[in-house]
Length: 342
Image (cartoon, rainbow, N blue to C red; front, top):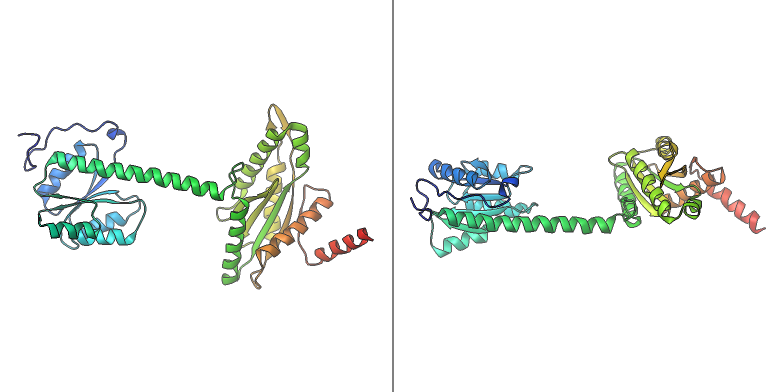
């Protein structure tokens, strides 16, 4: 049988494309005709694809909806349950990522039928009886498109990460951590539950830069961020507020719980020196704690302001400690300022 002959019995001896064996893409074959399904399975397996078979449109839809489902799909136009055209419409209406490339298989040859299939969301079509080489090159084209989309998604996520994260520490940047705080406060007001905010400042960090250099200071910031991040809960948010200051948002934490969490962060940083260029630098931090009870609406500016006052008090009391904001704290600082202005 010639390799160019239409598929109707044996399939041509076509070698897999270079690199395909290392990258076995899953392909959904939705075909109710057992003969055609068997032929497609044999061809696709030989070409280095992993075949996922469905005998009707409803089964195919369940497979495509599932997590990690195939991104290449060969759909027969006429199937029980849901036909290929309707399945195309469902896939496109769902608008899910990553993109699913659909090749519609049909015995129809009228131009209006083909237009209908493409309008429904098919990316390409092939008429029965199909030529094996033609099927293979059309799948290759689909695969190139999917690979390109994957590269674009990776690039998009990289840009998104750059826009929302601090380049040095990898934590959320100032804008994003403040957005996270505002979002948590909105949710907390709706659900009437507390939110706590920790403001963390590395003690005497200028001395580290002056003594060991700015590269050592950067290494200290990265390690401090890593230790704090490893201590947060999965649903907490941590970001670099600026310089050597960090903000940690703790949803669902009342004042005593937030105080305990802050002590954990302080201990995580102070527990052992940070090795820098053959030396060990002992680094500590001071932490100010503020919070919203959820019974009244607190603004993000208020919580940041209150945490900053508590942090200032922790610094004044000797550093390497945690202090929690209390309402009379602001009055005390106002009195101190008035006396100093004297």
